[in-house]
Image (cartoon, rainbow, N blue to C red; front, side):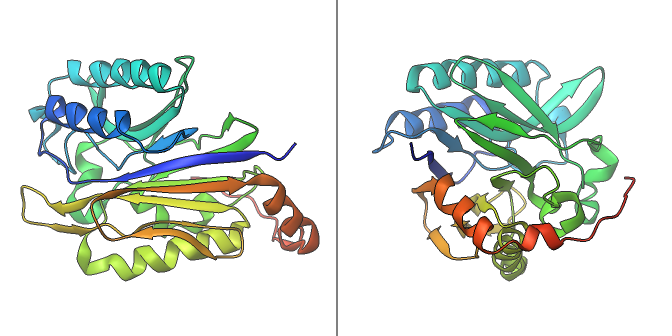
Length: 258
């Protein structure tokens, strides 16, 4: 039986440092999806925008958002993923949650904190990749600035899908477009990138460019508008390409310590 993964990429503006309003907005968007999907992907810090003032977010909001994701995932029978500001043991994290319909929540803390904005001084950096096995697919979700570091995304786990959730600004959007495609090609995997759109509280502009690329770098979804994109990932087709073009077998072997 052909294994497919139907995904929805919600490219949206964000309400600055307002988790309740963002949950309400994304809840409406998810409930109004025009297609049945297996996975919904939201942007980076989707309940707040890319804030460097996590003290403005009440610590209880993280748990509220995870519970909200679990309720929605069950109601819509779909997994939901995206990152949020999350406080734990007095430390702040840019933490991605991958929530499945049965309530299971897997987490990934952003490895490469964005030093240009001082994210490294505010949020604790992650140390471990996450590989989620869902609907017959192995999925590796990463966050924004991680996109610039191919060694971290290196496909040594034989994953099928690489996901980046982001707040990627307009001045460097060509890098976003180029690197998403490159990560797909070099890892011979689907690469999904979800960016926000609009202006934030600091007047930074975000142009979207959410997209999906297949294992050969072919673009199968793209938008620069505020909208929801849909794409269907076909594992059998991807594996057929990998068997024909055995590029992953020729990758260099080396050890790396973060």
